Image 1 (cartoon, rainbow, N blue to C red):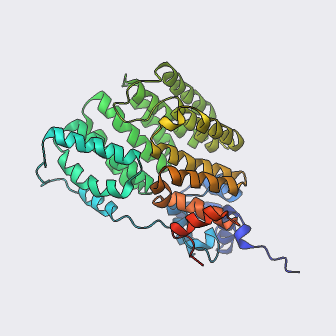
Image 2: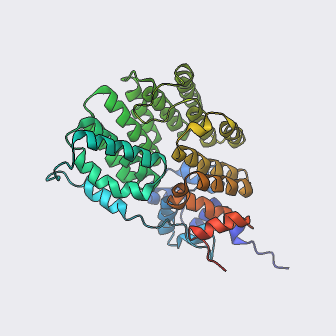
Image 3: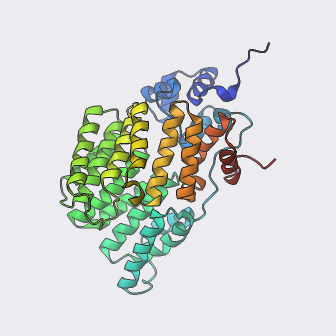
Length: 380
């Protein structure tokens, strides 16, 4: 009998450990090469922390002199997302400091364009949004509030598409352009999100709390407390995470119907979702899944924008995978695809999760069909 272990069944963290050992690298040497701490490497290799960002997988593969597919599983298609050329246009627009084109249209018309951009983002129409952003970044110069909003939208979509460094630039520009406490605080939401996406959780915590102290708007303040709680959870700071999310929940409960003038999406169900994600970051995966299942049954769930719901379902898929339940993970991805297809079909993290579900197969027919649609598998 052949007792050789099927490589596809080996968790990705263990594969990293095996290839690192074969290269003769200690955990510390490997951590230095990828710019992480030894503790981070140890948690990845033991499966305590998920390795689910394709950009990080690719960086690890480069250090280990491997094809990324060797970490994800042999003879499996790579989960890179289709290239969205609009990112290059956004990058070029962010690089323009002078000689911007004259504004096309009146301030009122540009304001309507920014409102439409928010709606496009909230419905996860990322390719269309990327096409519109370069012109909008040019048009909103000269109107501070519109420019801050546009930078925030830009940062948000770039985080989605795994361009966190570019998102950080857009978020920083938003803060620089703000000029008032409320605008600065709303811009700081984008800064905090970008820092969390980059893994700089202590900096994200500081940025969120500093901004929360300067603003009275309940939706902005509550959003910053929720972001601070997630940053604390990302650092493993359980007590701070729970306290900060309690502050956010208190604001959401006292002002559940506040007008969301600043496009924060803040409310009771948003805090429930943040509690789910914090529990997952802290390793309380069973609790996280219970919170997820409670949140999606709440009457407020469908009030969230499609982007927010689909993004949460991706996080839920990751949690299900962590409990060894690829079937429920696949169902969460299918649910996300039905709510906001681009959230699954354009985001690298979604494709990575779908690849992991397929690897642990056999996948359900509808999950396999989705994998074919996004290019992870071929039609027979």
